[in-house]
Structures are given as structure tokens and as C-alpha cells.
Length: 317
Image (tube, rainbow, N blue to C red; front, side, top):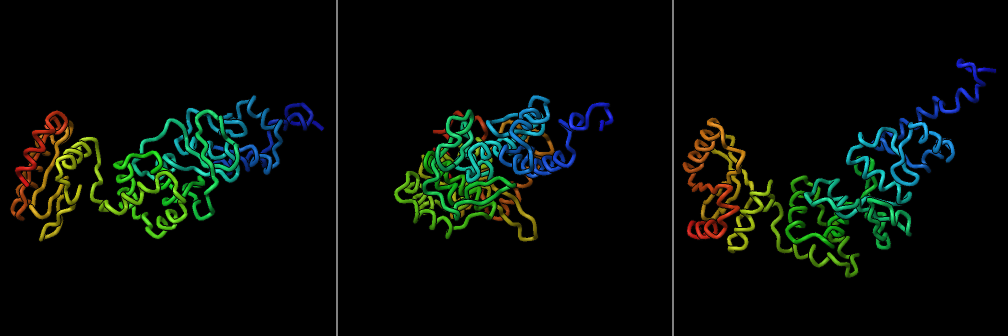
């Protein structure tokens, strides 16, 4: 029997098995275009057949036993995260800074993707940093966008091992803003921490930090907040919503409630159009009619004259 190409049927279908192709495509569609060799075998593809698909350009090797079904240049961040987890075994999960990145908690991405896995599988693979799963339990694992990852509570504990205090504060504020913070779950993780590095910092931040009060949006706001803290004049809220009596309202960059002081920090690339300038002044006037003092600092003042900014702020307060 011959195929339509004139070759024996087995040759005609050597690289073309529609049902199998469909199954692989469906799997990849749920995993950000990435598949693992163990999964391919479960679908009926042999190791040698996977190798032939790589040679034919139908699969693209990302790690040993991990492939993408599209050109690597087309992969997304989530594709890379998925590939790293698949490379480290069936019980591996995304963790530490990489899990925080997936949750949009504002932590800087590490040089490698953080994965927590059992045994040594995945160790030594380029672009992956493997952490021990010795203390990981089923309660510490969840799934986000079909990527196995640590729960928020465990992610915060892991991140606290190497994050600065300010980074951890911002991560907690981001979690609170997204309504993800579960203090019961965090207490449970801390109770099982057994002296792990990072537990002390996480407890301290949770005890002393007012949730959501320092959620800065950019480098300029972060720099101004540090000036306030070093001067011993922390604001009550950052990016606080001030409601108007007749409806609507305005967002204040920094607010000191007791002194009814609002500080706005103006970046280099905003408030530059005439319309924005006029809008800002009308907003300041409206807030003043409600009894607030509105003071503005420029980007240059915040970045290059922190001492003068602190002195001015101290006089205002």
C-alpha cells in the first residue's frame, strides 16, 4: 500500500500523525507552547520520534527533555517559566523571586529562574536555580496560569531569604492591593518555618508595616518615600484616594492625615502639556478647598536635592 506521495504508507506518515499532532498541539496550548518529554511519551511519542521532530524543526529543544512547539523567539515569559518547571521533574514548582514575578509582586527578577524540586533533578541546567523541596508540603503548592507554583504565603517566605526589607514591604503591599493576602496562611507557613532564613524578616515586616501604606508606582515615588523615612517623617498613605463630597475624588501621591498635607512628586515626562498643567492646578485648588495643603516637588529636587526636600518637608510638618 502506498501513500499519496507514492511512498509506502509508513514512510508517508513517518513525520505526520494527525491525531498525535492534534494531541500535542492541545497540550502545548495549555502550557504556553511548551511540552515535556514525559508528557509526549504519555501521548504515544517515543524518545527517538521526539528527536526526529527536533531535527525536522517541528519541536525546539529548550532544556533536556523539554521542547517548545513554536520558534523560541516567539516564547513568552510564562513559556520560559513553564519550561524551567518541566525541566526539574513532575513535582517541581516555580518559587522564590520567579513565583513573585508570576504574581506581579514587584520583586526584581533573578538572573536565573527559581524552581523548588526534590532531589538533584534540574541542578546544573543553564538559566535555572534549583532549591530544595525538603520543607515543601502540598499546602505550599498551587497552580497559576497552569504553572505549578508556591502559594503566596510560601512565596513571601522564600523571597524574604534574599529580598531587602523594602522589597518585601512592596511585595506585601502588592499582594494586599490584589486582595491576595491571607494572614492565616502566612501564619501557618511561619509556624512551619523552623528557623528558616527570612522568617524573622517576614514576621518583622508584618508586625511593623501598615499594609498598603507604601505602594509606590515608580522610581520617583520610591525615592521620595526613602527621603521621608530617613527624615523620620513617613507618610500615612501613598497614592491615597481623597473623595470629594459631591462625588468623585483625586489620588494623592503622599498623604499626612493629621497635618492635612498632600505632597505630589512631578516626574520629568508627565504634567508637561498645557491641559495636564491646568488639570493639576484645578485639582490642587479643589483639594485646598477641602482643607488640604498641596505641595509639589520636582523630579530634580527629589533626585538631586534630598536634603533640601527633607528640610522643607520637616518645616511643613
